[in-house]
Image (cartoon, rainbow, N blue to C red; front, side, top):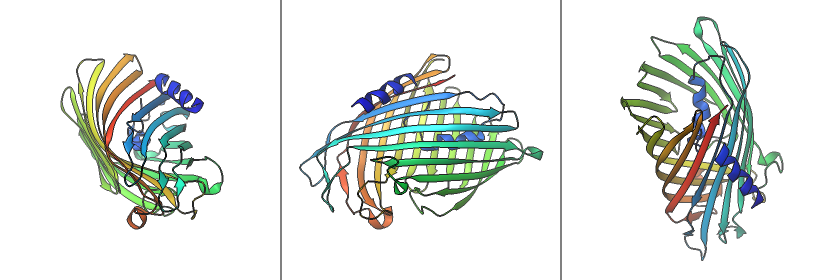
Length: 329
């Protein structure tokens, strides 16, 4: 309880939703290099109602807490070094068991992450960069090497006509949803004909941001296999926005005591959410929302395709409430 209270306090004083997407950090590479990026703090919490567990005489209630910080360490108009840290906790209240092994469902699933990012402008306005992250998504973080994960990204941006650019990248992750431990290359075209529309179109990802009306913005994102976001945001006034969104998301954890060290505890969930964003003061945003979670389940195995029926626990659909806050210093 003490851990939850600490994270709850952070969430109320610390712009990012509970992973508005986990990919939000990825899109920082498209921000202009100005040499004056600010420290940003963010926090969020979400509480799901208690719902029945399929085929078990038990219910499950889970709350999610997150706090993160982005710190520019060294920056000029042509070079940036920054540090990023994130603390995530999924707190689970249940008597459910993992059906194949008979073990109790973990009461806490942590995700502690630390990393560094770098960008540098080359001649002809090419930009090269990369980031390195260490994390420990587990019920007992940093218990051992088998409970740690590494993610490494490298990328190159090449200007094209107007605001457009070509984007090439290489991703390596030991905890990717699909093909962990295998480097995956990618290529995309960043198309930005105006300030009201931009899109990143390529393999293996897709992102679209469109402002069809002065006060209305639409955004969609897809990354294989089960990471989907689609949302709209409408400005009621200079300080008040309302929004609605759909997301299909997943997390992966290394549970202590698993029979195979390559197994992971996969958690899947879809969410419909609506709420209000308030610009309380300059640089501070507070978000209050609620919604409905469905198609919720988790299982333990090496991959979704081969093992999604192993040690599987299906959780009933139900409502949730959430609060998020962020500030730039």
